[in-house]
Length: 465
Image 1 (spheres, rainbow, N blue to C red):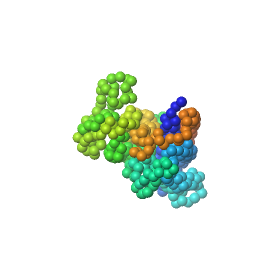
Image 2: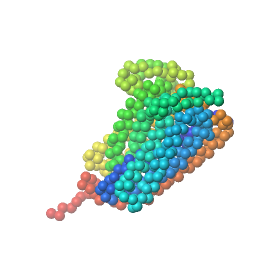
Image 3: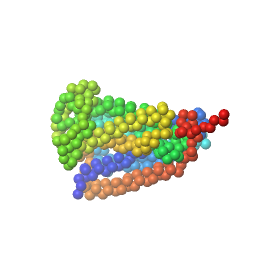
Image 4: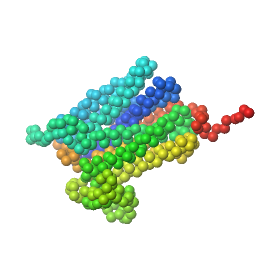
């Protein structure tokens, strides 16, 4: 029978990977909805009303499914990780409780006004409801990431013995909740959500443009999404570079796993790709390599903030228990590679927009359509690096994951719930995808657009003279 520790980790990984899709959609859509509402009230243009109504439907669906899948995640702390909950409940439970009482209730209350109250409340109250819905969404992420970041860089606590068991006691809430990792995680996650939704919106809009079913609605969507992409994609790379240096300082084991650095060395290059001599070694970044695409000194520069000769501590000199290096190594490279693609895609679209050919480039439209879900996929990769990279610790340097699993949980019980959760969450993901696809096909405007001054798509206007 499967080890209950492995089964519990897999179950939590599956549920998190599926659940995170829905908060990303709602958090990323929130700023767009606030903007659409503001423009609708200020200009009274029909296109902004259409934009607000359409994307609000996707927001509401994401909110509902995210709520269902998120509540279950919190229950898993008790069913599968009861020892962790007992040891860290005083510190970990607080942010989760506040998230429910403050952020979730704020979002849920004003979402009703935002979805159903446009004709029933004043413009000022309706605008306020859009802001408070967005604020609730982002506050929800704030409290969740406070809890998670504390597990990465724990501060403000003491370990005491209760009933013969070590328990984490909160002694400095400010140090604990404003821990060193929190601002890095929060900014990176929220920008990633906005970037992911901008890619999704641009990809959907590009599809209708490519299929010659574009309207002012989709043209406006594509331009707004591209404008956001031009800002968020480069910022994510710049912020990620600084974030990486922070990880090197606070979690050297994770950084070494990201670079597959087993031995302590100086002037370390950044491995972009590594091709092993044997295909069976593809999951082992330490294997003898036939060919390596490497940027000299870059790993040392990233770790130190500019010193090409800086030393990177290897995994062999940190611990005998390392995370699954191949998973962290390849997930990190895929994440960075996709981030570079998003920057290229943003500037490609920006150049075409400047040239007045944004809606004429079929290759750009195909690239945007193909990339529409890659932002969410990249978020998943980022969370894999974050969570798998700190193994074997559930609380870095304090409690190992194996010690946090429920002591009475059997392998049969863990396997049964794992299979059940995979089935249920897969069904929810399929249902969500079906509903979103149907909304896009049936609810969005698809009438032919009127040519504009900046983009006539080759239309010749007859001269009366």
